[in-house]
Length: 414
Image 1 (tube, rainbow, N blue to C red):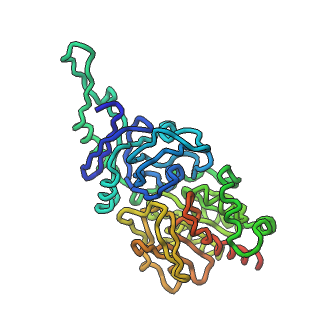
Image 2: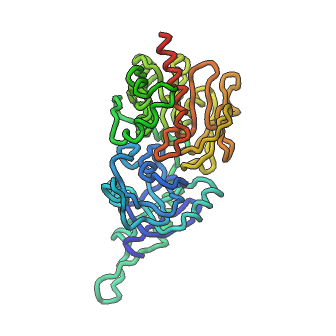
Image 3: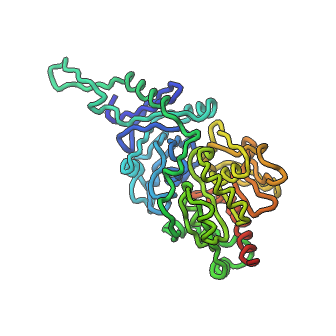
């Protein structure tokens, strides 16, 4: 074993050795696979991955480097990276650093040169697993000296002991079920969203989906006061809300409904975020009160799950989750099929919702799981997928429209 060796151990005892990159450290996490072909920077900075490591099924990662425009949060959020091949060069006009250096700066380990197809098949068959990764093989603390040569002591890694130690870490780690991961990623205090460098890629593209009026006319003449809950919000969501004319104030995840309503919003947005919605009773309670207030509410991903729980529904864990940019979802009303971006391990159980109160609007064409709902008598909408996807697919951009129409109706009636 060399100092560049990395070891990945799954809780079922599977062991994979490869080449270390990123930080020289170790981590324990849930291991999930992502099937997106592009956008590794956006994936790595998505707060919904808190507590997880991402295995990329695309075979080649790192060739476009890292830039300042494509972040979905202020820093990488994953616990580790698993890839088949790490690009030895960076070739992109926007690149400012390389993937390995960036991960090292943020103390995140990576392993390359492993059979990602075999690991993906295992996760599909057995479900999401806990795992541990070490890129710190070869340090003095884990090596023993053998001075039988009469020259400099030769350092040898006790691989068996290292594997056993990592296996113990993986099996003893409590996992994400029932845990509140949101408070690890939410903002410390409320702030007003101001467009960043990445906003230029969506500003003109998405302001015209609400109706046939000119986008500049809409943005200048109608201002929607939106309060966005930060459960781990992706910045591209904020860019899209802003592009459509929203004046967005972002609030921490534990902000009460009373505090939000005191700000007199035209609408409330519930963001994506990490972990198990069952571990967030305070958020479900706030959402329940917001729904009762008749304020327009729109939720994406975790926000969708919280709406489901606020309505008395149940949530459950998917076998291996939905992670990628190629998931087909059907709108049950129009029969239109969207190719969507998704990142979640939990879902709302549709049978647990009251059909007299809730209309199921979208279903996954992969596994039939619930992908969207609306309330029949209140301006409340939610989808499990990401209509703001960065990078694409962009099929679902129009999903924002009902929320803005509900806010416009509220404004015009007041």
